Length: 420
Image 1 (tube, rainbow, N blue to C red):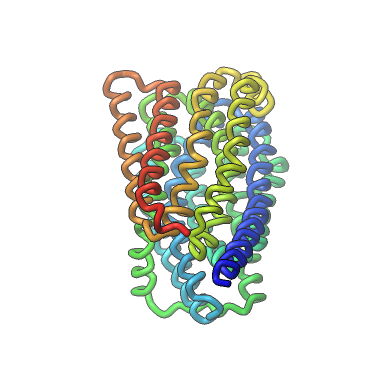
Image 2: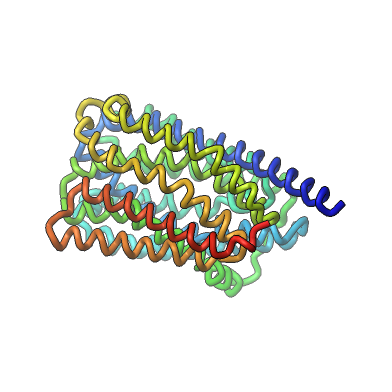
């Protein structure tokens, strides 16, 4: 009888995970479609220097965004799940998380003034950079963590489509050349404000009373979420830090543009992994099901392998379609980055949805931070020995992704008894 009951619970959990994943995939399709609309357009209407600057500012703003998010997409979701149906408690958590994110965002507005004047490329585009930072800070008002926690994934999709859809559509209207560059962050801000308005409409619809009691609670939540944030910020060593250092040590906007286009394609594919990881995370917290992880691997790893092979052989045509003839030079860079796609899917799966779900949050952070430290060390060794080239950076990036996969796999094997 107990076996049958457990099987029923596991089946229900798998169905809910599949539903969550499907809804998050709708958002990811939107996340892919919008950049695929604007990327070929911007690479054609902007010079490589201006597009390189856009890429570079985006890498800096991604740091700001990570600080604003501060791991709450994991810690707050977990808190809200544990709150169950207590809407007052959910509102209490939501209010203080939003306050905490705003405090962090405002601090970064001040920090950004100093960073802009310290980095030549950002200084050359200081107003563009500051507007981009403002857009990132305003996302603090989005309560997407709330809707993930109460498993209303369709709301998360609606918020994203609203935010990106408005910015994307208006880009074609207002951006026609280098002189229109400032419209890009302005339109991002308009999209974020629209999404924030929609999110509060849904909060009212679900009758969740947002409550803020004190700054002390917000700071306590920041401390609690630090372990998740440490893991997330470490992952920027795999992406944004590379671009940031390229801008400092290579100082060639065209090279930044080539790297930016290649990495944007890699990131677009990795975004396809996120709905799977995020979709099963709430269910893994409840069920800790080894079968669910195994089924995900068996289903998706063959698809990942075939996708990597297709991208390798079709690299020239992909970059020709996405960037145009002037980005064909990025083909070798794109090919050397492809191992990231093969190693990152199981690496991500063995992270928060598996090790995190069985109570090893610290170990997930340790694996990420350790791998990031190796990546950073590798980058500075390349600089020290005069080998800081885009190809070598791509090779280093793939090697560190493999290291993280093996590290997490070893920890999972050691703790497999904690899975059901």
